[in-house]
Length: 341
Length: 162
Image (cartoon, rainbow over all chains, first blue to last red; front, top):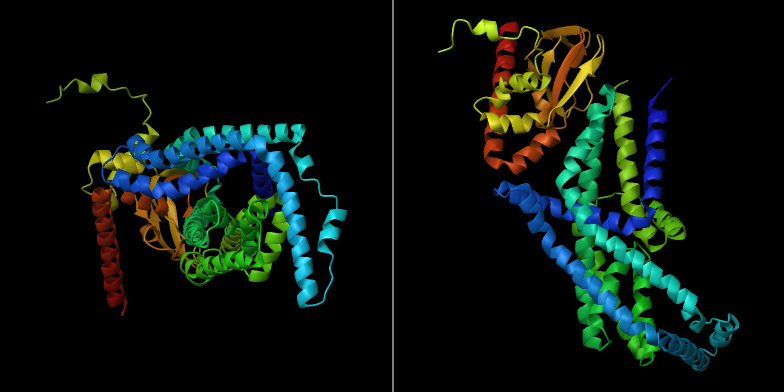
């Protein structure tokens, strides 16, 4: 009887169980892994320069942690200031959406003689945005905020231990492999890590570049909070294929809720996003991400849609590297099985 | 100068510490020749001790190799196809080509009797070299010397065969 399918199945079940147990702290776990992948080369360089391991980790961790603490404080301040006026803003947003849809209806009727009655159709859906801001929902969102803060508080110690002890944990885990799979396990681990590291570093750089370009663009066309909108666009850009559409949401909603959205501003927003995503697709992706995962576009598209349905935005961002990882594991296992007869 | 009665103080029942045996075996390999003892110990801490039953394969010809090995105890046969190329014993170092590249193994290694073997994985050696570039350079130079010596020996034996 062949044991490897049983072992692979056991491994998959253990991975799923660990994933399920880590569910409440997935943000902290994800951030720690990201910190590890981004900071580990820096820690190695500092160690090679003669710094002790603990000192090298402290030097590498300090700047991103200060940034994280600053971000969390800013988030709390903004939430405290903004929550009392959330209801009014949502009502304003609802009115803005109705007004914009009515304008689009009129425009279509005049230019193309088409009557879609978008405003009436949306009104018939009985969208009650103000209802979304009721006390119990606000309380639910407050507990979500508390969970987020708990996750953020877990990041520094977890990232520290991961940077300090990850290698010894890895060595112990890989030494559990049976003799026949010892070298194959190491090879697989190395290939997966190298690809994943390259992909995640590429993603972070991609988000930073897209954020910078679109923030400058939003500043030029005079949108409110251009930096925030740029950051949101950078994050939306991480979602493969659907990124540009998601990136439209924040600036459009902000304009609808605020000064109102006219066709000229909409075109300007589209232009800024087109420049940002155009540069992303023409320069950033071919140089930073091409070949790092190597999946067929059709497979990637389907996977993104399914992952979005199952795991939301996080699922959409993570599904491509996870699929790439699975591909390397299966290829290496298959080659190993073939060569060992 | 040690006293002639030193043998009276030796404990004949004391078992040799497997870690020190591994350290000693690695220090005597051509890879770690002239490398300071503390650096050797740091590298040997990263090696993996594995136990094999008689007839068990350490690796097979054609498989992707990622580690070099030192025999701590037991006997290992090296075979290519149906031919036995060599028989190795405690202290012998082999598989060093895998420390440099992803090439397939050129021969199989099989335990002839119960054996303990210590493996150094290429990726861990690379990490070590990144952390200690000075010692790393010496280790990589030793590795290059070893491979060149094996290449010369191979060329000489081919010339004799012809």
